[in-house]
Image 1 (cartoon, rainbow, N blue to C red):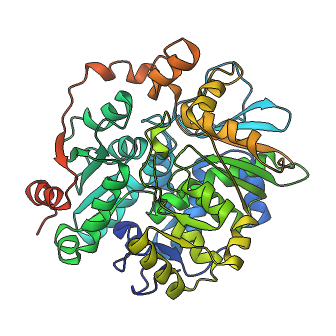
Image 2: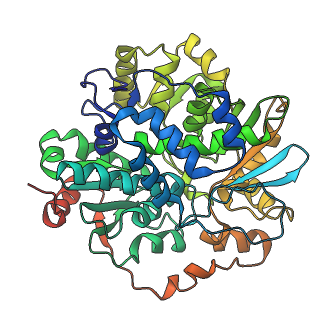
Length: 471
């Protein structure tokens, strides 16, 4: 299988080349040149709940002969062996990497926060670490990995890449726009190859810097640049695994619907990928906070950046440019790269574009959307049946705002541990959630980070100084 750019002006590459590059050199995002389909036997085995085995099968679909079976097994084993076992009293699906908790009849919460940084990002990021090691060792290369984060991606990237000999990680996060717990997951690793950067701007400024680094082709080549944001295809593939497993376990007589708290559209797109490959999935609900570009796009047909992003109780979703939307638009436009290129040129110039009517109809055939404000988020977090982080609360409330109720089982994605947002939880419930035991000393660990202006040149200078991959 080869990987092609959504903008059509980059040569096709292999799976590992797409993973190592992150962003295509023409500014587009990599997608497979065709969609594999899984068997009924795989769906049955996925329903039994062995995450590592399911991940191996999906990676095999996307990597083909490029990665051998034994290497796939080693990668999956390293990625998920460290996820803890569930010990609480609540009834849940036996799978322990991404367990399902039943909260009502046909109503489930898919817990994705049992990894080392207490975020759903760990499920994919822990797979990327050994994938990088495999590819870089085979090629005798080093890599400079950059990511812009609105909170959780940075901590997950640090946990996945800290101490790895062939990769240096540079994490850009908006100063004052993440929780203290989120920040400390990025700044306290103590690893020499991890460089946390607080940017004096919002998340979109961080994301714009990362895109600027990639668009400078000479710099990107000399730095051996790669990205682990949700634009990286390996993250999409890895996230699709828990959709397969949860859908297969809950679908019953009809497909399962998913409600996804989202800002950058990567997790929701991963659900669509699983559906496209044959998972029994019905509707996918995009649950946004007041930074609602995706909800507005689906309801009005216009994808348009707001004047500014709003700081909310769910900071990982404080995003006004949903990068992965380009991937689903590419599919909705019949894989017309020229049309995608023209629309995004218009977006760069004016901050918006109208989605063609036929493409909008195709999007609406799979997706619903609703936005949730902070007052609604707090009200949901006070719900005694399920202790939710602010992002999960957005998804739980969004379901109540849909014009058409969901038909069939419903799975709501719980994307972060409540302890990552202690101030918001305390405001909603009056009680401050404790950190899990393995992170009880988080606030005693020494922090190390740099503070920079929202300036790509300043970030380039830091990378030139510190990256072992720089040539």
